[in-house]
Image (cartoon, rainbow, N blue to C red; front, top):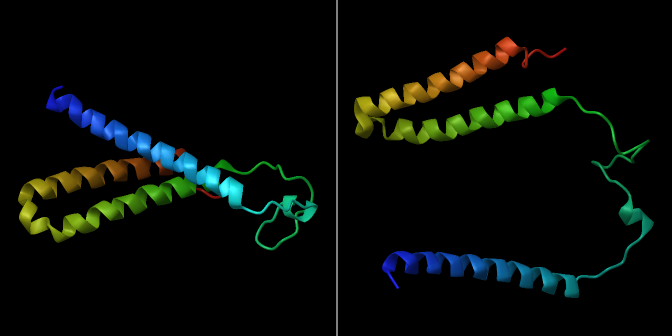
Length: 121
């Protein structure tokens, strides 16, 4: 067997071991956990407020869009901080690459503003 396929077998065996370990742990947890169902435990709980009415309601998409925009710009910050530390080692190439990265994110923000996503009405 070539070394190339032997590496794949190693990765596959570790993945299979991970799946088996998860299944075994879930099985052990199912056998050992206490099971005391009651109507109070089946009731919906939200931040200490008793549920009123139905559990289903329509929520606005803009909440998710704001969350997605936050995640995008938070990830941008995660990439910018290490770049700022290594800026001298990267030189002009690193500066140009980061400017392109920031430009792409800025275009996304401008697109979101033009689509009216950030307007709260």
